[in-house]
Structures are given as C-alpha cells and as structure tokens.
Length: 112
Image (cartoon, rainbow, N blue to C red):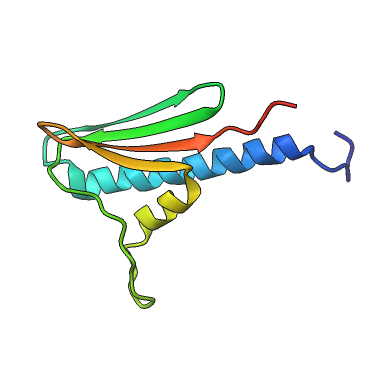
C-alpha cells in the first residue's frame, strides 16, 4: 500500500476484531487465574473460527459464577466482564460438574 493511502474498510474491521479478541483473551484468562483456578489446577483457552464468527472459550475448574458488574467510578476493578460483553456479539457461561466455560462470539467482517 502506498504511503498515505487509506486502508480498505475490511482490513480495518479485521484489525479491530483482532484487537478486541486479544483484549478479551487477556481479560478472561486473567479472571480464570485470579478467580477461577484453585491452586495446582490449570485453565484452557480455545479459539475457533467459522465462516461468520470467531468463538472464544476460557474454561477453568473453579466454582465461581462470573457476573457482569457495574463498578463505581472510583473503583479500580470490576469492569472487565462489562467491557468483554460490550465488545463481543455474544456472551455466556456454561457451568460444568467441575468448573465452567466463559464463552464469547465475535462477528467476522464480511468478505469483499
């Protein structure tokens, strides 16, 4: 691409999608480490792409129940799942006998 040329809209959309997914992986993995993984256990991150979606799943063995919070302005934490929910096209939690899976879906930009 020539200097000063504008990026096609699809490239910008894909770049934005990648940035959003990276932020959400970071947030969900951090939550798994801080709140969902008892000492000595692990967590797993899974990304799957279909023609129209990218799915992110983070599974841990903890018993916590993730919930979107509405943190006060002066609070330093408590906004992560709210941001994740805003960035993703879909958000949910599947509870298992041991642990849970937090799942997100992102819409892929349409091909030109």
